[in-house]
Amino acid sequence: MPDCGGGKRLQVGGQAVIEGVMMRSPAGIATAVRTQGGRIVVKTEPFVSLTRRSRFFGLPVIRGAVALVETFVVALKALAFSADESISEDNGGGRKSGGVSWQMTLAMIAAVALGMTIFFYLPLLLTEFLGVENGILFNLVDGLFRLIFIFLYIWAITRWKDMQRVFEYHGAEHKAIFTYEEGAEITPESAMRHPRLHPRCSTSFLLIVVLVSVVVFTFTGRPESIGDRIFRLAMIPLIGGLSYEVLKASSKPAARKYFGFVYWPGLMMQRLTTREPSVEQLEVAIAALNASLTDNLLESRQFID
Image (tube, rainbow, N blue to C red; front, side, top):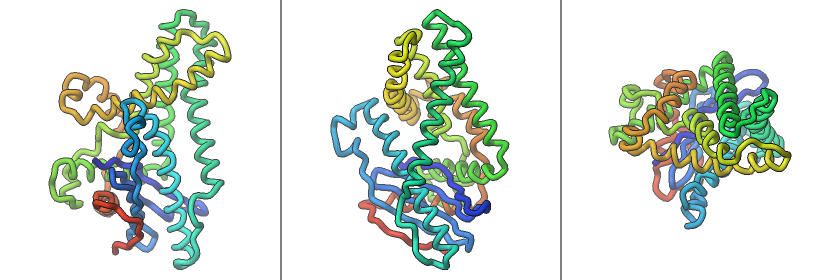
């Protein structure tokens, strides 16, 4: 089953020049971008997850942690492709950058480190500042701070005008995937009829991570030393793996029926992180989706006018 990789809007010199969508399926990855000239460029690349190549890494919870790392790598490659298309467009199809640069890698690592600081370490410091002593109450307050920071972060990026196009592509991804899951013909017209809110979305994943972290950290009590704090950071892969399983379960009707309250906040949050897309944006999302669904995916690059 394909998963969306998030809408992308690459900026060069202060102007947006590339917009695109990445889709990932069991066979590989497909990234579709629309250039300034209006063409859709699609790149496909075979990619078989480690969770499918190793029985151990395919175990529940462990596969979620592996998927997070793989998503990081896949996102870097998709950004590099978008940057290459930007360079090619600006140079009239000239030389490309040649892949993921060390600057891009460092930027992504810095972003992850900043996110962990803001969403995990800062709430811990604020809770300690309040002087909460009870272990259970400490982790509830810590989780509340984390939730507040996520809401503030999402609210802040919705104020950024350039992000509106990203949210429209995000909605296009969800509509395309809903069309595929329904088994209908995948066209912009049929996709437009579907909702833009999807339960298996990274926005929902963020909120599930907060809920799972509260439960996991409750068993660790109140951190009293530097070692305790490091141990909490070391628990993040476990939290990510458990959250992945909760999100994955949302595809099952029974989970949505009996545990809908777990997924409902994420769907409501998607009202902020998605917008109704245009037909042109749906065309990009569908191009990426169709390319990702090819059996025995091969590495290729093609144009769609």
